[in-house]
Length: 124
Image (cartoon, rainbow, N blue to C red):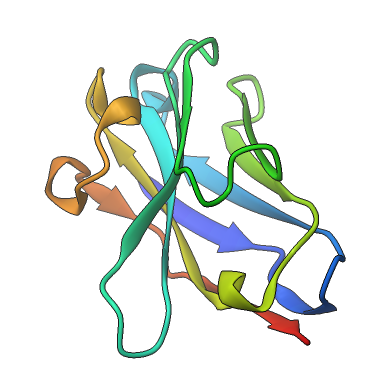
């Protein structure tokens, strides 16, 4: 599976952005998907995960109620709608794919495939 993330940019505090991750490969629907982020000088952290079926979702406490993850297996895409953005959301955002059950796992080791990252900058 090859992943291509897009949709990042510069936004003011309180604004919104929608990230997309396009996947290649016919087995996309077998993978759980997730978004991670990494700020300068910090470790990569889990943001949100979604099961292959699109039914089960998991969010980091820091983004609950503000971010929504969704998937479209027909289009091989997973998206992250980010609302009420804060300066602390500034980071490079990565999409990742892992085996069934990954959506609930917040560590990076379980994810086998990674996109290249897209920069999100929230100005105060």
